[in-house]
Image (cartoon, rainbow, N blue to C red; front, top):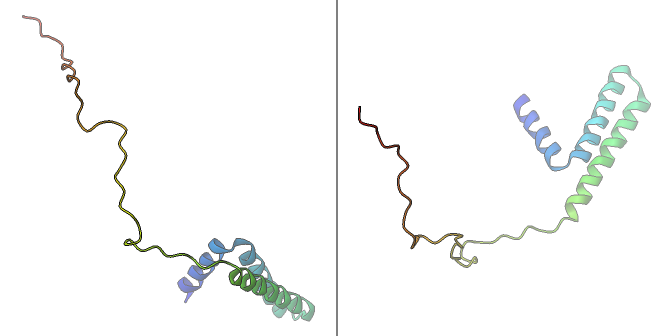
Length: 102
């Protein structure tokens, strides 16, 4: 359960960092207000969580649908090479020092 909760929080923060932060802050206000029996802090936290969820839902509903491209739709392209595969020039000689006779 702990690993699942951590993975969910990490996913929310990566996709929507602002709403994830507001959601976490509101949840902490609810927790602190519940422990201290402070009703106004609980109501403030619940309203913050509700606003964060509403903003997230609104942003997801206004996002355009992703376009899926299948490999059959893509035309095959020939790779463009900067250099020819084989050079017509002569290759360079080996760089080796000639040995002196001892």
